[in-house]
Length: 312
Image (spheres, one colour):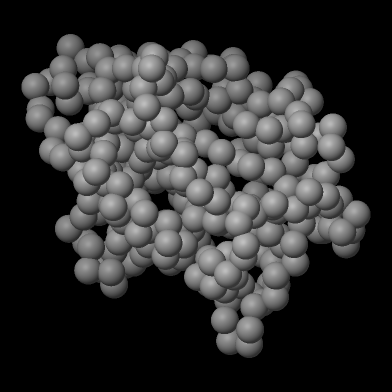
């Protein structure tokens, strides 16, 4: 019997956890991507991940841009084809916000069921949730590589800040340093760290009293493209973005609109970065610019009242 049967009766998308099926988890860290149309980002995203973790599990949710093919080619180029598993999840998944709230947690269309199904295929003692637009710096890859074996003797959750970079063109981008986007990414695998339904999205359970490790700033860049619709998976209708938990998403909307309107300086908290000739701005920011900046990475251009609201 599965641990979580798909509401629609499609047994291929039931959730069965390895610890209930008698499978032994191997020591190590698996990075889990849930992606849709991320072919553009993967040449930047995957190489540092392959250098940092033991295995990569990429679940393709209906891409039409050859996301899975690009992932396999990048893995080949990195000499990591044997450490990549690609799975297909063909069901439309409810967007975060009102659609998610209205979808039963065990439906194949639920974010909660989607995440549980993805992570049920992990066969290492630790897993890392990662997005298809997040680029590790070389420093970040090194830290995760060291952590991947040090974590084996303990149970801990690892959180790290990420810094949104809006790419205007190949040489220009705007980096948002106004907020501390701190989120847990690495978890031990087990029955007390599965996903449950929350109001606006899925939520991974955290065992009471578990150790929490917070990594430093400047290790992850979250890439946003100005020429793309980065927020199609979100709905604004019926979502209270004044809630502290959701201010980060509202901030992303505001940054995107300010750059499009040519008024990023008026918004505050943004840093314009220009790459040297022949260097892509993503490479420049992730491999050079961030590493050279003094710590902490702070640009207090927001009003003090907002800074207090969004502290994590």
